[in-house]
Length: 155
Image (cartoon, rainbow, N blue to C red):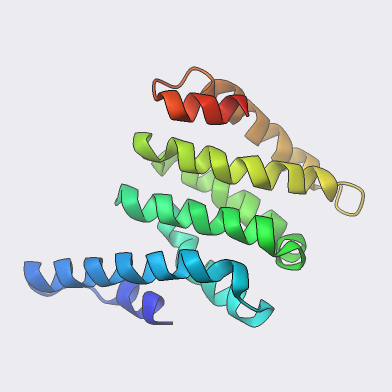
């Protein structure tokens, strides 16, 4: 909730904005460590806080948001099954705002999300459409200039 509050506050002096940004970064770091251990009730708050960060101008916040989405997909199968289409839509929309230095974190997120979508195709055939768009993105990422991002695309 504090993270959402820190994101919602706007305006003020440059020093106040910088303090809010520091607070947001600190809370995001804390959330990255806590996400694997959260209960189902808290996961909706996490989604509300981190999905908009995928489109943020700050590359560090984008990286942290992709890590959180990756952890959500990896550790909370029930949440993923319930929210898979919203997560897919958010990931599609955030592609255009993905900073170049964030592509490795995005590919790491897709590395967990796409196999999870494949596993749920039997129950949710609509997930096939999302898989196609992400596979194309991964194939294009093979030509990334960043060595680590390119390696992530191959894995």
